[in-house]
Amino acid sequence: MKKYNCDILVVGAGGAGLRAAIAAKEADRDLNVILVTKGKLGKSGVTATACSDRMAFHTTLPFTKPGGKDNWKFHAKDIYEIGGKVSDYNLAEILAKSSKEAFEYLDKLGVPFVKKNGKPEQFVTDGSEYPRACYTGPYTANEIERALIKKIHPHPTGGFTPIKGEEIKIIEDSMIIYVLTSQGRIIGAFGLDTSERFPQKLRVFNNKTIILATGGAGEVFKINVFPEGMSGDGYALAYEAGAELVNMEFIQFGLSSIKTKLALSGSMMRALPKITNDKGEEFLRNCNILFAKGASWPISYEKPSKIIDLAVFEERAKGRKVYLDYRENPQRLNIEKLKKEIKDWYREKGVDFKREKFKRSPLSRLSQINPSIIIWFKKRGINLEREKIEIAPAAQHFQGGVRIGVKAKTNIKGLCAAGECAGGQHGANRPGGNSLLDCQVFGRIAGDTAGGEAKSIKNPKEISRSQIEETKKKLQKLLNRRRGLKASLARNRIRSIMSSLVGIVRTREGLNKTKRQLEEMKKKGICMDENGLVYLLETINILKVAKIIATAASLRDESRGPHLLFDNSGESEPRNDKKWQRYIVIKKGNGKDE
Ligand SMILES: Cc1cc2nc3c(=O)[nH]c(=O)nc-3n(C[C@H](O)[C@H](O)[C@H](O)COP(=O)(O)OP(=O)(O)OC[C@H]3O[C@@H](n4cnc5c(N)ncnc54)[C@H](O)[C@@H]3O)c2cc1C
Image (cartoon, rainbow, N blue to C red; front, side, top):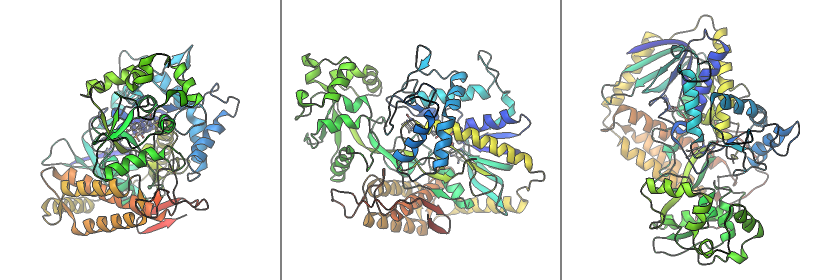
């Protein structure tokens, strides 16, 4: 067992955790900051590993459209209104107002944003009114992660002054498993060494404040584009500590490649491929809608292009596989009949429909609009000249999370949250690019807040010997437990139920069935298998988070954003109730609905 004392414990080393640790240290170099990550630094979590067609970082700069001194207000309005007016408008304002500073900070750190004449290029993403998305390419998030890591490690070739490496203590291969409070205030946390499967050593952290930056919970769904290990630990830790969670029913789902986990947005849809099932049948024929999907990747009740995700879901529910095929045009594609704005868009991209190849082949169109993606697939074993891409709606982002206020504080003293782990800043829909921004803005705020609070605590309480003994016993009990479902079986079961009943099609009956099945699983208990203790603890968290999502979804008696509620399965129109404009808060012990 190892013991650590610090002022601030940052849990998670993605964009939010790294930014938080740096902010705390920049505010006061005397603060003792420890950053813990479940995997290796720069190799775990979404920021370090995810990629897409073109990853976006939203910002409003002085020259960003529509221009003017109060430019940011349009950005805040998009976050709040396009979000479905079910978030905290004050947080949307902070995001928008602070986006310039967040961008400039990353720019100075050397994130290679694409620029023209010295100005970053900005494009329009899903659910935004104006072009605000800056990018480096498909790996914007990874470049942000690398720049932040470089900042905390001395780097002789870097063009900035790094904080000395030893100033922020980084503990890799360590999973925080319990957060401890005393009289409503954080006093510490327990962690497990994850580098070895057996035995896993206990780590004890005495700290004044904790920042949860553990990202989302992709592992709750069978089909997701998250890296492994994203089991929603932060949500479960906060819930157990008595914190409030908000908007947990709003999860971003969109069509993705099953094999490569790539979100099929932008050019992948705009090339107008054929969508078929495994019998070769086409079941979607409206090409204008298919093109629109390129700019509205996540499913949303408010977007007509939702019919594509729903049709794919329905085919898969019948046991059929679904593919995107770039070798042939959709049967009903009539280039002459495409809308004028679509033809204009193609012309701008150099696709001349007078040339036969552009008329006949989606692959030719794709190779003109985005040639690198064809190579990207080839490197991962999919040759689009010969093969189709198998697709399904996959979970990509959690809009909700641990409820925070303007200072990134939760309702537990000494507990802050930031990034995807936090909630309230986004609504039902999240305009693309605002999540990477959110990690930087609320990461910085959480670092400042936790630092200020830690300095005000003069005589911190420590974790007692009896609490350590109790935790050891609790873990031993888990190790010895033989009754219940084996962890891997339980995990598969939860993920299957969640993807089929709490994914893009939700019915009252399905949600109730899910809650019942998850409750039964909880009663039966989950026990360790050959995957070890960490896997078991993650699976217990997955079950908790799944229950929270199903509960929040069953409370929302309407459709909004990605929450599509149908009266019965097989019905074509989701239920709507425009007056149902509420914010669902879940807390241990009661389901509160505001
Ligand atoms: C494929 C994909 C494409 C995306 N594209 C975009 C985009 O273009 N624009 C945009 O704005 N957003 C995008 N997003 C969302 C965005 O990338 C993420 O929301 C964001 O990177 C999350 O950052 P984070 O710091 O909150 O969490 P992460 O980067 O996921 O980091 C979480 C960290 O917590 C650690 N951790 C977890 N549990 C524990 C524990 N119990 N103990 C210790 N450590 C723990 C992990 O190891 C990791 O270090 C995309 C997401 C995906 C998956």
